[in-house]
Length: 243
Image (cartoon, rainbow, N blue to C red; front, side):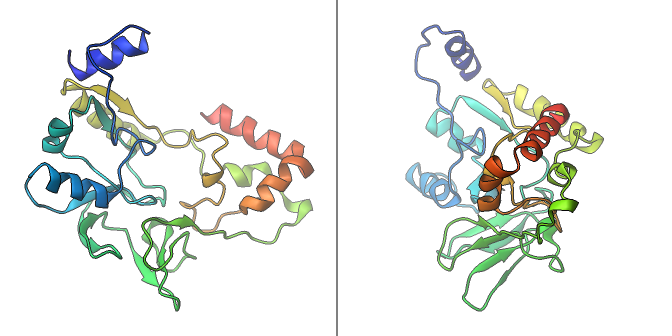
């Protein structure tokens, strides 16, 4: 069976010739860039810097040679932009805290604070407050809480919907190209469309927004599930309508 057939058979609740295998088909099944590099070494593949496909968790793209070596059955289609809002393109070298040389998107811009923590910025704009933080020696970014003062009379559910918008023409063109590319493989195509992580608390801080508004503190959000029920309902209703 091909990977596509194996996944299709399994999704139809029938028995394939083997359990379908997905690594890095989505940001949920992804592999940290350090592990991708280690797997390339394990299989004796060409040594080259791994590209980071998901900038928050530092997940690495799996190239065709490693997909074949691991027997992966899924071909990925990722969004055009990262969770921090910059395009995943125009690669440049970067070194992790552990000394691994990798490739990151061109607008993957960082600074170090006084504690040695690594800060990353929405849209790569160093003039904005950082939206992610990697503790010194860490492996991935935590989302920075950039909660503006909460003024009850000024709260508008639209503030928490700013990053949820219909897919743009530019993004549709990207998906068309990527789906066409992935469909040429013999693997099952798994496309991740941004903006549909409904209820995902990791999105509440608005890491792609320059200056997030509304309820953006994770603790405040959970409190609001009890204290601002109508507001939360309106946010979820808006997300569902857009999705």
